Amino acid sequence: MKHTLSVLVEDESGVLSRISSLFARRGFNIDSLAVGPAELNGISRVTMSVQGDNRTIEQLIKQLHKLINILDVKNVTNLPCVERELMLIKLSASYKNRSSILEIANIFRAKVVDISNLSLTLEVTGDPGKIFAIQQLLSQHEILQIARTGKVTLVRESNVNTELLKKTLEHNSNSLYS
Image 1 (cartoon, rainbow, N blue to C red):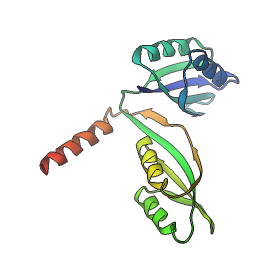
Image 2 (spheres, helix red, strand yellow):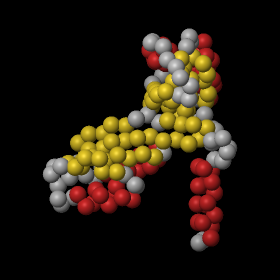
Image 3 (cartoon, rainbow, N blue to C red):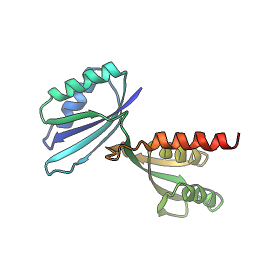
């Protein structure tokens, strides 16, 4: 199972190296990693996605707590969260296929951030499912380059689980037409 960890760290040199070394020693691969300033000066938030069962992730969290410069570690996998990722995708875009690419971009509310006679670069922001979906659709065109951030996430203070709401609404609308 994929887990999302939110880690608050002091902005000190070597902290990310210590985290990655801990994962390497334990044989874990970090699927996604995003680091940036947090709400307090001198503190950063590290958001990472890691594969593992619940027991293994609990042990990993305990080990992370022992590292210096680590202030807090939370497994936010099962908490209602806002999740976002950013992708820049450059596609080969001739006059023949440009309108098809722009239609897909429009549906996903992607922004055109660069255009030339031969290529088109889009900026897409959204939850990881949206990023995956647009990338799959655009793969019918020649993808020249992709750059993706890691997933960033914050726990919803409202405790409203929008993923659960989406599934409930889909189920209810499907049963209306059955």
